[in-house]
Image (tube, rainbow, N blue to C red; front, side):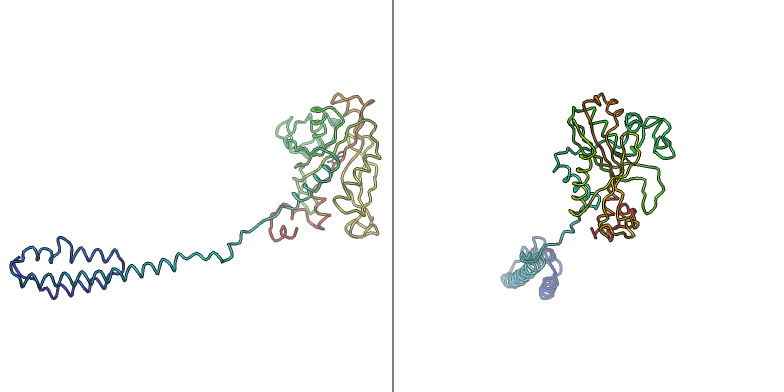
Length: 335
Ligand code: PHE
């Protein structure tokens, strides 16, 4: 060593560095610098030749070691305090609330329909939405000139494939797959080239019922529809039939359910008739039974189809069908 360092200044500088250290890591750095194996004081001690300098340097080193130890204990305390404060877990706090959704009104109606028919012993089906012309029209005895066969009314992929326009093809599928007696309800989406308005949407849902057994009559159809309408709308409801035409039923009818808002006396919802149209129905046409290889002399059947959106609108008094497709939570949360 050429010049003798000023050990008082060294001690003061080291003590100040210890106090200034804001973390254990900082402090450790300062300790290495001022007390480590290569620090001035360690080197100085190695050079010591006389007792007086030795005592001086040992004194400086001992005091500095104490200063660093004290500071280290203080920093460790502070750090522990901080962690205890920051990482505290209060197990008595209420948990974070998980936002819980609910089923879309169409899904709710679908499940009600399923329940009503399962209670009658019907099987629930879900068939394909892309249909062949054969199943959507031909086997259901649509005449070649029927307007639904036009691409103006129906979405065609190619001349043989359409987006099904109704759930009625399910009638053909189940009759081809299984032997009667058959009791089924098929629920799902159907597609028509309609402009979007308050009452029409090009995608909607239908439920389609079919029963094939020996000796079924219109009275069985009426009793079944009465049961289902009461399950959907309440025990006071009545059902009536009006004559109509469908290619695959004979006779064909349109069922009405008594209006639940005015209880039959006439209001805006039922257009002052006391009755609300519920879809289509009828006895399975013998031609359709023959198309699937069933003997119309032995077997008879009835079928019906209703829209789920319409059911939801009536149950919940929803004036505009578009509300069921827009996904606006302010609307959907009400049901
Ligand atoms: N598929 C017909 C429609 O969508 C309804 C219907 C179903 C009619 C079953 C008779 C029998 O309009």
